[in-house]
Amino acid sequence: MRRALLLIAGLVVLALGAAQLALPGLAERRVRSDLEPNGSRVRVDVEAFPAIKLLWQRADRVLVEVSDYTSGEEGEGRSLADLLARTKATDELDVHVDVLADRLLRMQDVRLRKDGDVLIAEVALRTADLDAALPARLRVTGSDAEGITVAGVTSVFGAQLRAQARVLADDEGRIVLRPEGIPLASLATVPVFSDARIAAEAISARPTPDGFAVSARGRLR
Image: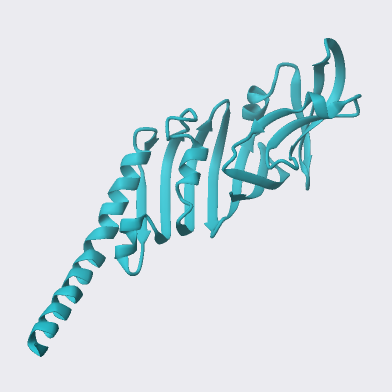
């Protein structure tokens, strides 16, 4: 009986050891296969102990590096929001993308860190890319601890008004373009990023030689 128990214990240890060696590699290949249709030069490193937790899609730490990534449409499973939502069971996430194109906006040197449910993002934005993504006749004018400011001509209830607007995180967890200094400005707010699974909490920016360095904080819901 004792020999049988020792044999069983040995087999369990052997199986766990084999899983520790094999499962992280399998998880890395799966993440790469998810990213490569929209990205180039993808590198993934997955850490989990015991590795068997990966069978339940749980990981201690995931490191991702991508040269270029084009975010897919929501609902395809390849949008930026879709990919972030799927990391819910990852304790720590560290992502670096050299160039990220998400809808109309092109971003440089994107760094995203996740600790638990908390998300911290740092992005380099070129003024030309921002201007190209903004509605017609709006241009970037500056930045501060509350976001990025733009100015130009906008339409409110059919009337053309020259106004200033700010890109910021609102109380609903969205990143929005909100006019300032005009009547009923909140009704003219335009969502820039909105997803029920991700709550944006704060956004700030500082000028750089060719644009802005933007930092944002949020959390997975």
